[in-house]
Image 1: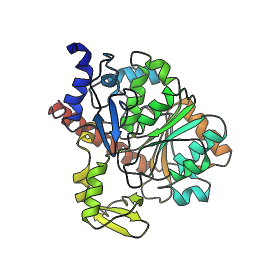
Image 2: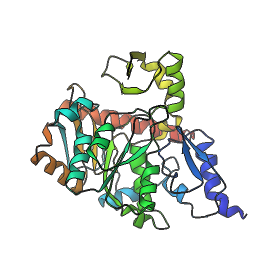
Image 3: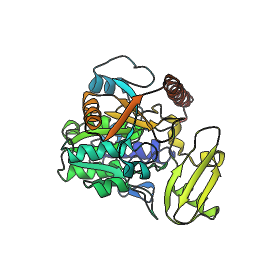
Image 4: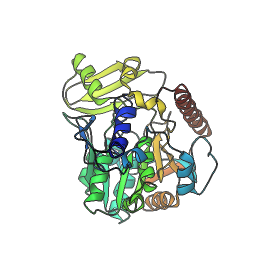
Length: 352
């Protein structure tokens, strides 16, 4: 087997997987048959002979010229301000109590996906399931019951892009995807990849990004919780606002508060190289609204995102209000700090 045919896979294995900086986004899984996702870990099933380098082109832990993404998706050439390109930033929540009762915060993501499905803006949604006894993973949904069942934050990686790749391969069109910033970058890089990247990306009808400062290693989290005597399927994870410094886990039978200082030891090493906190390459980005329980911060980035959000508000699915200036300032500060730390880590050469 010629060396150049192996070089793409070898580079990904050597520079990402063996270094322990894979963030389990799932971009390579399902796109390449030789990468598989098993219970929270990306593994190599066999040697690749394709020679296309598609895995290298889309992996968010392989260095990439982000300027090309800004130019392609936003028609700008300069580095945007710290929150990335956007048209509006507001506070919002679901108007439906059934959604708010199961949501992590304001239920905006669930409400948007439901509205998009019910009004023909998307045909399918790839969300992240709760994982139960195994690691969370992507789930292809098109029913209200499935979508509501996926509500809430996981705080762990899910490799949900695997399900996007499989849906595209099966010929699905009009796919909506909810994912983390690293997954939004990988999905956007797919659009510029060769061969057939643009054609594959045309199946994507909506990108909803989730604010993220880090994600936990599922296997290490499971071992940690078991060592603490917490077993059973987790119903909910949460990090209350400062100064609490705790990580809350709820199962069917128990609720435990754990020191956030210990939980931080379980963060995926690859997360420290991510400079994007607010999912800059999404149509809509959503996070918590600190200091106001039950509300989300919402960043509308594209015309498609604005249209979906405004229609959902007009239909009574969402309630909106002005984002307090103090919250916007804090969001910018947090996003700036994440970017600075990531760039520093890269300059120190820790990611190869």
